[in-house]
Length: 106
Length: 113
Image (cartoon, chains in turn purple, red):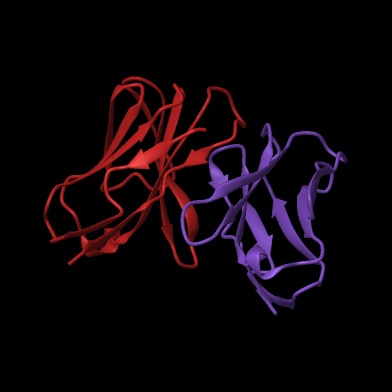
């Protein structure tokens, strides 16, 4: 059974839309939750979340962790075609979700 | 800038061959990891190492072994390659401690015929 579940598996939006990617998990004893963006090559780091309720922001991207309800969300506002990628959620360093494939069309 | 390099970007091998995938990092990271990535299955941890000569099994270690003789180098070995080991292999490294950011190499796409 998957310990980290990402939803949706795939998403197609138009440029300018706002998207919310979800990551829910079952493991409770972990130090941090990480978000990665993967384009054609290896994943690149986006955010590390360790505390519940504190939003992290980087440009048009933001993320928050809810340790009580066991989930995290990644928001992307005013999406651009360059945001098209697979977004991966991971618990600490060992457990990855299957990813959400985001496609942004012009 | 952290740099993680992998010895090959693409590799084609025959069933039964011994395959070595090498990973080198230049940031003096204690932890190093090998993952494989397959469509629909996401990233799965094969082995990781938290120190020289130390190794731990991940989720799918069967058919693989690893070697970490030097801190900067972590090798993944397929003793006898099989077609179901055709995959993208990703190496990563991080500083010690749980939850530290991992830095990934560019990946090796292995095809076993």
